[in-house]
Length: 207
Image 1: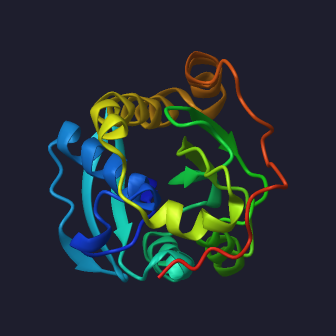
Image 2: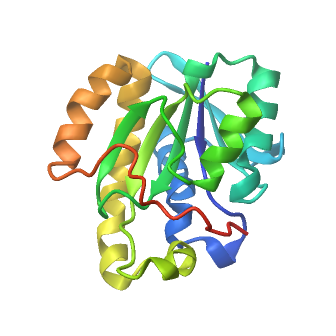
């Protein structure tokens, strides 16, 4: 079984903020698969389904972003997933808005959700679906930027982004990460930034 986890902060207050794009993709994927991901447990909302012939579990941690690893660890231990069967969907400041970048393993780039997951699992070898949200010109406003709602123009583009990201996740599950990277990284990221940009701000308060 593949464990697919979207990162975000719980509550209506954060629903359409940039930091919650992982939740939004998870919801879009659940809708496409006709999965109701509202069972409560493991510090998450979750639901089970299938992508092709492969069973999947879709989950949204309810711990707030900086404790995401607690929920991921509970899920991994209970369902006995291998680390390489875990797919994490998250926002990324170092990628331009609309960009989708798939990746296996790597660092955390200052993302507090990834930091928590890596520390909890004692490994960084899970698959990531990185969703570009851009970054503010003045980096001192990064904390507010990630917790701000999408602009109207961004909201207009969001449905296509969620669809593309959902398709990318399905491609990872059915064809593997390399085939998915070959298709989606080039298609969605013609002017990509470095994989792990050291400029990512480290002091985001994810509460």
